[in-house]
Image 1 (spheres, rainbow, N blue to C red):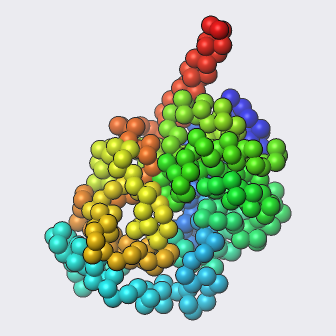
Image 2 (image 1 turned 135 degrees about the vertical axis):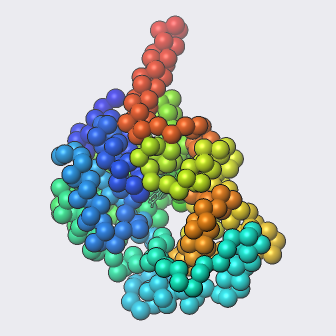
Image 3 (image 1 turned 90 degrees about the vertical axis):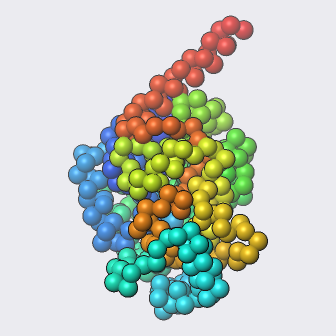
Length: 374
Ligand SMILES: Cc1cc2nc3c(=O)[nH]c(=O)nc-3n(C[C@H](O)[C@H](O)[C@H](O)COP(=O)(O)O)c2cc1C
């Protein structure tokens, strides 16, 4: 099962696990895969704490850090126009009224005056203000062997600094053209992510996209397959398409280590693949997520158009403070891909890695048997 990316990243199985939860990252890395911490929501100081914790728990093993620095967003360039306070003033009153009406109609209590608001977090927020500090913290941790970016090409300083520090640079892509652009910018690892995937995604399925990307990039660029991969059969299929490994996200949401609201876990367990819908209503860019009363409200004829990133994320964040406080199951959404419909229980992350490896072996033996029979 070893492919050359395993040697380059010093890992056992070519199974990459994206998670915002450090416990999942450490558990996967310790099980022989490669955990990747989604750093989107962590300002540099908090990222330092998270990465120190991971280093303490993986004892010399390797892992990655993923940023989501978008190619386009409101407030691009930083400065006063990019502060959350200013960006919030750009949210039209009609959108706020719509959200208020949706939550009131659903009986979600309003926030008390003394409610302590958290610092706003949203994809595309504080990218210019915090990115350089996030990079500095990331590169000061020796276990981080790959830095990854989503939502477009990483800023040039990310590629330069990572390479200067001897780390690989990865990027998520949803089309062959995106892959070519990323390679021209110096990216070493291309994650070909199909539309089945949880989180931001394009429109092309994994089965179609992966071989297109494999054919489009030079041989020294590793391609990882992402989107809809949850067991060893899907992993074997991805490797047959030419991928050097699999990059997974949704399956780790239903692991014992994942830090989730209980009502969201219940919704994820109950979801079918059709409940993972692609919509702009969480972040402002198309992202696959659980269908909830929030996604459905925005599909009604009287709903306004979702706002661009990060304004929609700020609006969602404000609503989420209100519905998460009362643990509303009807609104308890989360980014999740179609594979969520195949998962019916919560397992330790190391069991997910083991099951995937065993399933890969069984699938490969099955194919060998077909050859022998012919
Ligand atoms: C909850 C969740 C959050 C995600 N957030 C990010 C992110 O911040 N950055 C990123 O590069 N990818 C993100 N992704 C996408 C994953 O990196 C990965 O490509 C995707 O989950 C693979 O498809 P799968 O969900 O079918 O396994 C997210 C995925 C999920 C499920």
